[in-house]
Length: 93
Image (tube, rainbow, N blue to C red):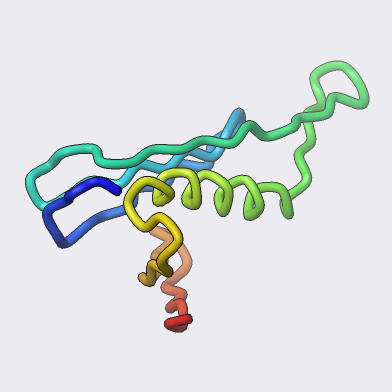
């Protein structure tokens, strides 16, 4: 398990190709990262679709991968904020 300087910030980008997450410590070092590819279908030419539920599962997988070396088997806690719709607080487990 890595030694990191608290507090930690998780940055997430869910784009058209993948969900990506990095964890940055108080000194600006990237101390964890993860990504999960997204599937895109093209049922007809110039028409592209994605399953919106996969956005969440891919984001979850990317965050878990980014936190794996930091938290190990311990539970991490935090909150999520979407730049456009509001805030979601996660309960401590």
